[in-house]
Image 1 (cartoon, protein in one colour):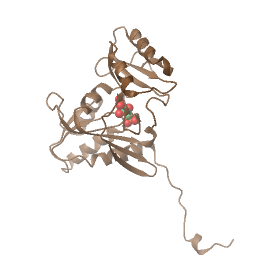
Image 2 (tube, helix red, strand yellow; image 1 turned 135 degrees about the vertical axis):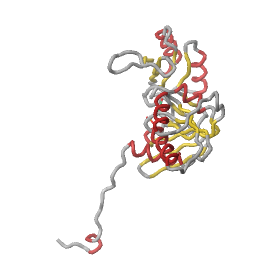
Image 3 (cartoon, helix red, strand yellow; image 1 turned 180 degrees about the vertical axis):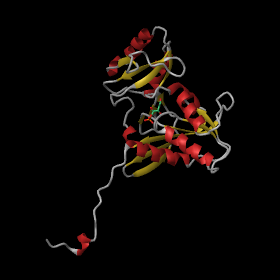
Image 4 (cartoon, helix red, strand yellow; image 1 turned 90 degrees about the vertical axis):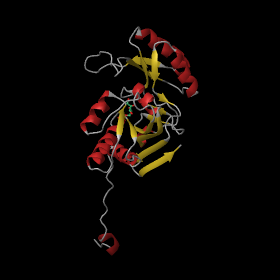
Length: 252
Ligand code: 5RP
C-alpha cells in the first residue's frame, strides 16, 4: 500500500496512562517546591503524603534543604520521617507551623476535605490547624462536588467506651440522609481498628447529600463520646491536583 511521506515519518505512540501512585507522587513533589530551609513542617499521612516526606528527606540529605523540623501527623509518618532523616518535634514545642503537606480522601470546590480513611484524622486536624499554610495534594480521583456524596466513608473518631451507643447516636443524627454507621474493623481479625490515640473509628455512609457541612460538623462534635470527625472545613489554603493532563495548583 501507498504510504504518504507525512505518515511514514511519524510513529504514533499511544499515550501511556500514569498510575494513580505516579499522579500522587507528581502532586507531592510539586508541594515540596514550597518548602524552604528553616521551616517547621506538618508532615501528612497516607500514600500521597509519604512521597512528600521521602522527597523532603532526600533534599535534606543532598543539602538542598537545611534546618527543617517536622511535626508528624501519625505514628506511621513519625517512623518514616525518622527513617529518611527529618528531625522531629511536636505541637508543644512548635505551636505554630509554617507549612503542612497532606493528602485527602475527598476535596470539594471550596477546598473542604474529607480525611481519615487512613485512620489518622485527629492528629492531622491538630497539626494542620496549627499551620500558616496547608497544601492538600491529591490525584484527580479525589475531586467531588459535595463531601460525603460518594457513598464512601466519612470517618468519626470516638472513644471505645460504649461505642455502639455512640455509633447509633451518630446514625440517628443523619437519618434524613440515609446514614449508616459502621465500626471500622481490621480485615484479618474483625477486631476494632484502634487509632494512634487509642480510640475507635465509626465510618458514616450517606445515601443522599449531607446538607450544610458546618451544621453537620457541629452536630457531630456536640455528641459526647465523639473525639473528632474527618471533615476539614476551611482549613486547606492550597490545592495541588495531578491528573492525566498535568498538575494544577489552586490557592484559596
Ligand atoms: C489518613 C488521611 C489521608 O490523608 C487520606 O486518607 C488520603 O490518603 P491517600 O493519600 O493514601 O489517598 O487522611 O487518615
